[in-house]
Amino acid sequence: FYVWDPLALSPRPNARDEYRRFVPRIFEMLTSGRDAYALAAHLSALESGMLASPADEARVRAAAELMIAHRDLLEGGTA
Image (cartoon, rainbow, N blue to C red; front, side):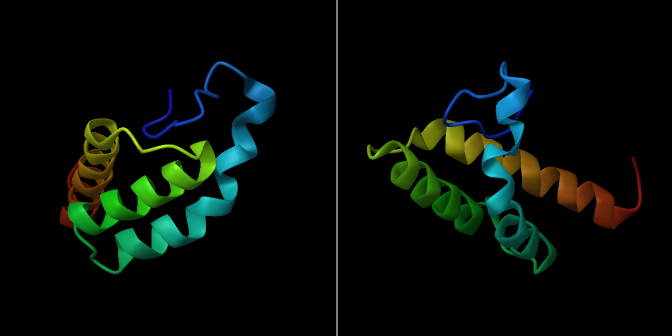
């Protein structure tokens, strides 16, 4: 299960590293306090670039909000 999987790679274990190059920037955005809007814009740009077509904005926004919610949960120290 991937939170953000624009290429639908989750069923292919040998392709799981396809998004690895995006992790550092997404992690930096999360740890620097960026909001869901900024994260969604970044994911949308990545998705559009990979697929050469418009991103699925609803899916991108849902993924960004989930990542932000988990960040906030971790920062709050509760699980």
